[in-house]
Length: 392
Image 1: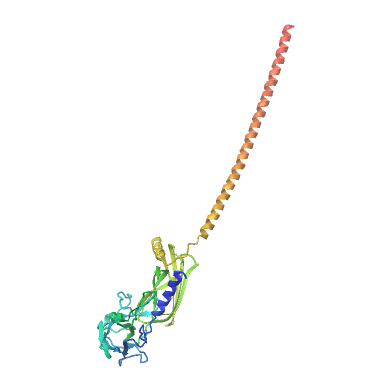
Image 2 (image 1 turned 30 degrees about the horizontal axis):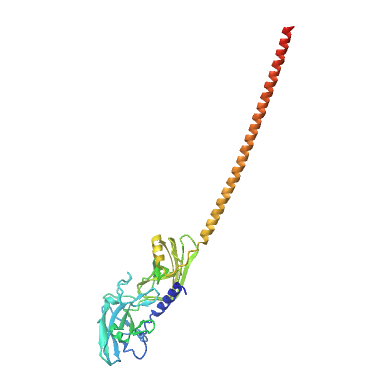
C-alpha cells in the first residue's frame, strides 16, 4: 500500500476519533478497571432539561458555580488534571474544545476560558466522591447568541504509569488514557441569531504529509452552524477545468470560529501559478446557502518546500513534454526539409540561369568570331583584288 493511502486512512481515523458529542462524556478506556468516573450536576437554570451537559440560561453579570462529581472506585488516591476550553471548529469540521488554544477568531468577544475558572488539579481519596466547581461570570452587557465551552478532565499522567505495558514483540508501550469532556452552552436571552459564513483566504498547505489546498472559513455570528455541507473546487485562474474537488457533509461550526477546509490533492505535486477556489456551502440549521470565490497564488519557493515534505508524490507525467518535443522536432524537420528543397530549387535555377548565360556568351562570342572571320576574309579579298590591279 502506498504511503499516501496510509496517510489518508490515518487522517480519516483521526477525524472520526475527534468527533465531539456534547451530550456525552467519554473515557478512552471503558473497561471496569477505570478508577475515575465523572458526572455533571445540572442546576435549576438548566435551559434544556433533556440535555446531559450544561445548557444554561443566565443573566448579564451573573456569577454561578457549576458542579462536576468525580468518583474514585479504586483503593488508591487518584489525581486529575482539569482545564477549561473555548469552543472552536477544528479542521475536520467538528466542534472541539482544545486545552491549549491561545488564539481565537477575531469575531469572538467572550471566550469561555476567559469568563470561567477552576482548580487545575483535584485529588480524590480511595473509594470516595469529590466535587469540583467551575466559576462562571457572564459579561456585564446583555449578549445575544451563545457562548460555548468545555470542561476537560483527565487522569493525571503519573497515575497511569503503572498501567503501561510493553509489547513482547515490538517493544511498544500501551497506555490507557482516561479523559472526560463536558460541553457548556451559555445564553442570556432567546433572541434569534442567524449564523453567517465568510471565506477569509485560500493557500497551499499539507495535512499529514499530503498536499492539501486550504480554504479558511469563518462563522462570524454567535450561533452554531449545524448539518453543514461544503463542496470546494480548485482550478487555474482563468480556466473552467476543475483540478481538485472535495465534498464534506454533516459538518458543524462553533459560534465565532474559523477552520481550514481542506481540498485534497492526493499524491499530486504543487505547481507554481495563480489559482481560484470556488466554494458552495449549505446548512440545515439555519436553512442557508453560501457561495464564495477566492483567487490565490502559489509561488515556486512554497511549491518546492511543500513538495519536498510530501509523503509520496506521483511520478511526474512527461507525456505532454514528449508530445510537445515530438511536435517541435517534427516541425523543425519539416522546416529543414522545406528549406533544403527551396535551396535546391533556387540552386538549380541559378545553375540553369548561369548555363543559359554561358551559352548566350558563347553564342555571342561565336557570332563575333564569325563576324570577325567574315570581315577578315573580306579584307583579304579586297587586298587580293588591289594587288592584282597594281600588277596589271
